[in-house]
Amino acid sequence: MRPGDAAELLTSLFQRLLEALAQDGRLLLSLTSGLDSRVTLAAAKKLLRDIRMFTYSPATKASDIEIPCAIADRFGIDHRMLALRENKDFPPGFRQAITDNCPRPHVHSAALAYIRTFNQNDLHIRSNHYEIGRAFYMKHRPKSPVMDAGVMQRRLLEKGGQGNEAIVAEFEDWISATAFPFDSGYLPQDIFYWEHRMGRWCAPNLCESDVAFDTWAVVNSRLAYRAMLAVPFEDRVKGTVFLKIIRRAWPQLLDFPVNGVLHSSVAT
Image (cartoon, rainbow, N blue to C red; front, side):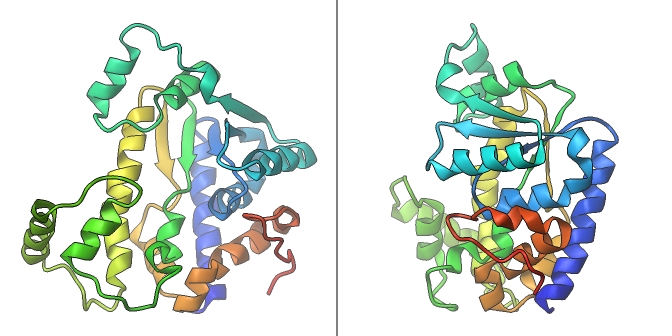
């Protein structure tokens, strides 16, 4: 699929989805200086009266606060800062309630900040799954590296965790039981990222925040995934489709750098 065709389909899909969700209440969108949250904000342009943006503080880098604040100021968007360090005074039983709901911790202070800042009827819109369309595991690697149980273990445990033979054996058993599609026509890294990275990281986050509000992922259908995965590999790595979505829906958002890079707002 050509990037322009994918962008046209996905822009319409995301806009219609957000418009439908906004009929039942206010939408909450997190915003950083990155690409994913910018795409969702662009798709929500017609809904500015029905959305509230928020940004976590402290942030990994200064631009993740500076850029959202600049965007909110320019376009008059309701924007809140969630001060995580100021939300560690957990009420009695709060931490245990979250742990019962989600044994794998992420950021408990974020859950408390959600409760104190927003209404339980608000709907949190997450943008994480765009990464599947950008060949997350392949950005800095050859297109077709070896993919086996050992590699799966290393990918799953990146940034923490000790691998061992038992974990490798479990992956080998899973590969055998599921006939994992190494030769499906899709990159196995994409399938693995989708099924395991998102399942292991994103799903517990949703459980953790469930005490505050419901959450909806923008990319939530096979139609969307099929379009994201069908464009040429190089365009996926560059995020071409997602930049085109922004240019279609709200090009002025590219007046602000994306992860430190300033892109043209002119349609290409």
